[in-house]
Image (tube, rainbow, N blue to C red):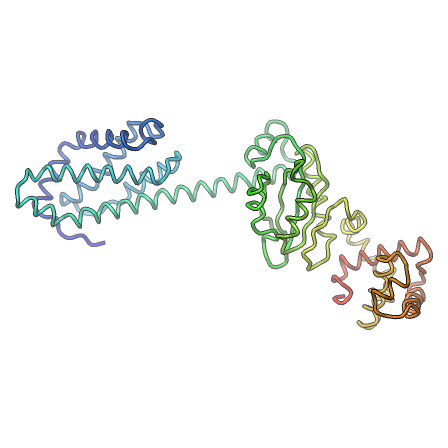
Length: 399
């Protein structure tokens, strides 16, 4: 903002206040301590620091109003930054600033000595004075916000480093408990690791930390290159089933949950379990899978080369068929395992006659050389189907 030229009275009055600046500062400090508990009984700011900052700010304001060039907003900005660093609430800082401004106005009013000309000069300069105070308050707020932003960045880095340390097993002993405190996790309890991924979003579980916090559940999360990962504290009230339900509600991608574990030293193993469970879910889905509920798919997800070879070796002739024939046979095979080989149930699910089901299964046997009546062949086909689901492009219709 461009300020008008300071009048003769303001120059004279502000110069007089600068000459007795220490006295004015003492009055400001006393009033702040009496009115604002943060500076008084709580003593978040030492009296000497309060005097120093007020002297610097009053000197800058009065110096400008006395005709010195430049609006030095670096002083209030520094004050705001320092107050944020020690945790003084911003409203308290601004109230203290207004108290100081009020004292300056009272002192300027006293300098008029009830002279009508000086009173008019002060009123004429009032808009300039309060605009200057407002600009300084904005500078103070900007400095405060800058410090808060830096603190949040430092906290985020410390949070991510602590979580990484737990999940990779790089800490032990006292350092491990220090990481737990940084993350807000209890040092003892029951935990689960969650891994999630989505092809289009960094957070496959948006808002999950806040949603759990609202329920009183402790957790720690971060976004990584391959998705989102977190440690969740389980309790008798917040069980695996409740965690599964909440994750299912919020997931926009694929999610895997580890087995529960009793100590944070087991977090690296749990991370691997959750990642495997996530990899074993349907590609492109919003499926949430517990490691303990799908050990066969998890086993296949952990050996992609073997799984791909198994799918190709067992189902290769089926997969080579035209899309419609291939999908029909694969769907029939999946229905066979879903309905425990009950032909009538499969026919109902496939909207076809029982003889049609038998013809399709016989065709699979001819193409693969494996009959579902053989336990070994049935096992190979089931594993190959799971391998194709995980690594072969999703559902049959997407293969």
